[in-house]
Length: 84
Image 1 (spheres, helix red, strand yellow):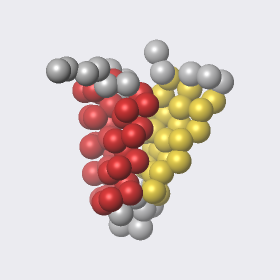
Image 2: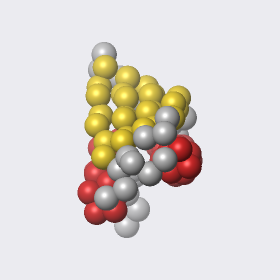
Image 3: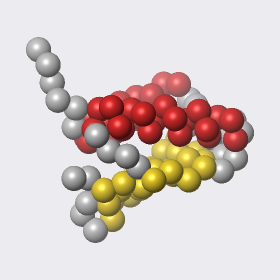
């Protein structure tokens, strides 16, 4: 059985990843109905931010066909995108 990945199931997977890996905490804000902001926080440095950027960004591209705008710092990664 093949199931289509939805934005909700993507967020569910992100929750499981963050909860059980302990490698980041995240918040999601929904703005104006279609715009989303995912803020991921960690204490593992800039290289980890770059790693998280690539892993989440690729997951969004491949599963949801969404290309987010990404900002990174030493301890956070912020993804901004519109849900089509």
